[in-house]
Image (cartoon, rainbow, N blue to C red; front, side):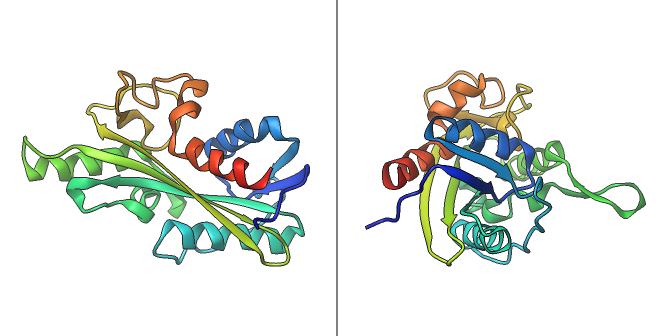
Length: 207
């Protein structure tokens, strides 16, 4: 039997503001008070896992242990069929860029361009199907964890479209939709996203 999550403070084990906003919106109706790992000054653990589940667990356990509170981590990424599932767990790494004076940051347009460049190298008839994958891990300070996964199937478009969302959203067109994730209102995206599917499973199990 899965352990239940009681109302109260819950650490969102992420320093990604876009991801924290989405998770906070999804948690809104369930009586929890989300606080981000960034707001608590918690360090980001090195993501050494080779799967979404491993990285989500690393992040959730690190925040739960450091804060003494339950912590929820999301590890998500884009899997492109023609690229053998890449970038996958390295989705954020493809956006890493050196800025001035050696500072690092993420350039998502650079990352989207890298994906498109690799598809163009394959040829004009390349399979453009892709999926966003999200694995959520909820961890308690005593080390217990629960995992939930969601997927959103679609295809990649070029050039990027839309200014909402974050990450690769401007090039992802969900199956059956005419708008990319970055063109959709947040409520519309939340209804069909990979993160929403994972959250629905979490809510069914934990609340």
